[in-house]
Length: 285
Ligand code: NAP
Image 1 (spheres, rainbow, N blue to C red):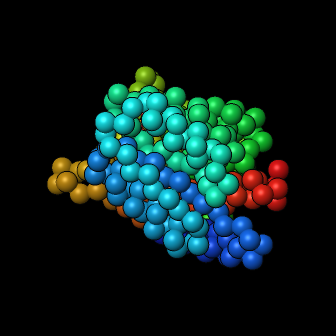
Image 2 (cartoon, rainbow, N blue to C red; image 1 turned 90 degrees about the horizontal axis):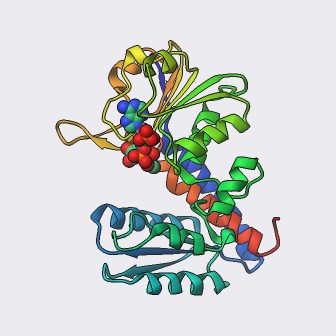
């Protein structure tokens, strides 16, 4: 039976490290600051934003929330981002997605100063991830790398398969695994005979958005299985993309949902904000 990777515990370690570094920065008169913009009243987004504010308090950051009405225009949103780009107190800017449908998220992302782009969605940061010379990593894939590292499994030369090719999870995930010398295959909804590919994976990352999609017959014996999915099962209970109960009998390590990848994402956002503050204060290149 697999060992369960405890995302809460790894996440706590990351936050403690960020808090300790923040305390040291404060002694030099530097306080990392995060601006979070939320437009409209999507309940899930409100929860995410609240959790981000709480995490900022926990690690000792300054944080500011900009809650804008759903009627906000593109110009008003763009102007806020440009104002925040210039403010010294703000090290990182995050615009909570999805935005209401009349607003263009690409336009907003492209306006954020890449040095303050703590979500790592700006094309400059995406390009740097491709090259392998980066300061910011998108929070979910970066958190997953921490979880894999926590197992002690050596990624080098392993066969890694990523299911899903989104810009925020699948694609950057594949890049990070490649940078650590895994042999990586990216799969998606048009992939033929998915099972024949996933069942060869030493490391399998599922980022699909379909409840319990990955079944035990799709998984290699002894694989490391990372479940990014956040879905509701037939009883409305939170569940991942992996059929946890059956797959855990077959693999060596597995992340649960909840309590796996989820807690890591905000911790990596804290890490990116700290990095941003260091860069803006000349303590890092
Ligand atoms: P997404 O943008 O909807 O991408 C889903 C991917 O899955 C697409 O590339 C899609 O392929 C692929 N896919 C769909 N059906 C498939 C199938 N039958 N076989 C193989 N691949 C298939 O989703 P996302 O933003 O990457 O998120 C994925 C999941 O992770 C969601 O449940 C989301 O809620 C969760 N998530 C969790 C966190 C966290 O912090 N825990 C963070 C981000 C996302 P095509 O490209 O061909 O359509």
